[in-house]
Length: 112
Image (tube, rainbow, N blue to C red; front, side, top):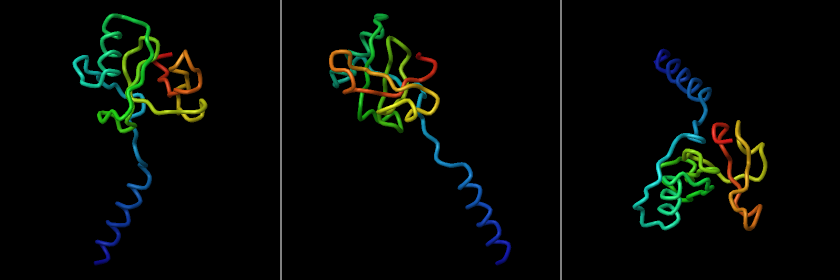
């Protein structure tokens, strides 16, 4: 019984030290055939080497629920932000050039 408590305590301690992983900046894949017009437009524009920035919300492939591309970069999982400190090692950038400040997302260091 004592050994079981010790092992359980060690397991709890180890799980507390690892924390909760996120997939922020992990690659994601946009489908050019998607029924979501924003996703298909973004995927097709990126395939044509356009320097577009786009973010697809409610994207279930990402734990962050957002897949984006910044100025023609490869696609990556991202999250909404207000300032750079919201973005771990990346930067908070505008994705809407028509109405700045209304669509800000974290941009991976590789996409900058």
